[in-house]
Length: 184
Image 1 (cartoon, rainbow, N blue to C red):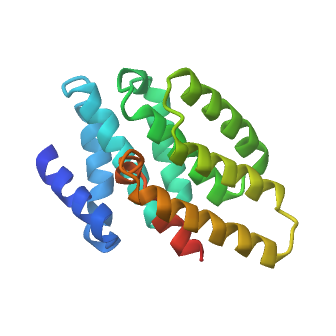
Image 2: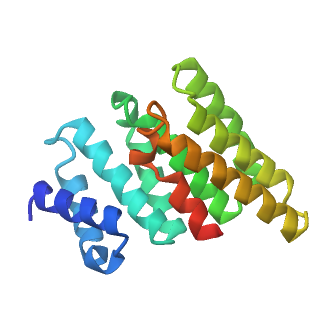
């Protein structure tokens, strides 16, 4: 099986959300990436690991998504793929949010915000997501009505951003609107 076949399968699954088509191939792809790590382009390596983490996130296997994304951070190749690093960091925050790691989440939000600002990558979408997660972590012990209201406002804002010409690209990497729709 080649990277091209894995890529086609993975893109199909990420687009359709049908995890049964790829679950059996995920472990093979990870083994393949590890085996050929020094023989493939760093952007290919990072891109596939990001997609694998995104696959596990979309399918609700957050602990596996965290394991994969931590493996990508540990490889230290991520800094050589500056186009994808902001999205990897954002996905990492979303994973920790789903796992309920609020103490770590507060640190990740501030450090990612500083990182994105320093790289001039803190766009309106990322800023909106980070602000929502910060508010959400503060409302941890709040009533379900307040949480639902915040979620609906956030979803409405994301839908507007998704239609904006300059913000649209962020949704190709991580579809925040779909993530929130699942929560609603």
